[in-house]
Image (cartoon, rainbow, N blue to C red):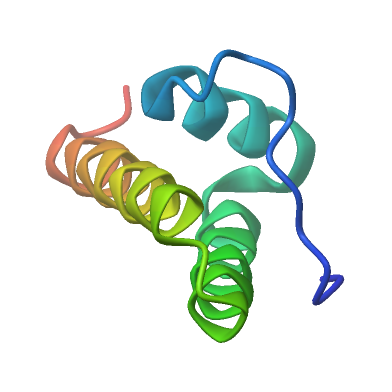
Length: 73
């Protein structure tokens, strides 16, 4: 992953961002991108982006937990 993760132009909707990241990187890669986004926002003092990235991480964790809980047929 790239340490300079930026938010795509999706009006900062965490659920849309999470879906986009899953499409691009898979769930585990998306979680890594969210971690990098959180770290970058924290380091730059950007509280708005930090909040958005935390919500993205929450959505990704929910997605991962749902996928693990439902047995594949």
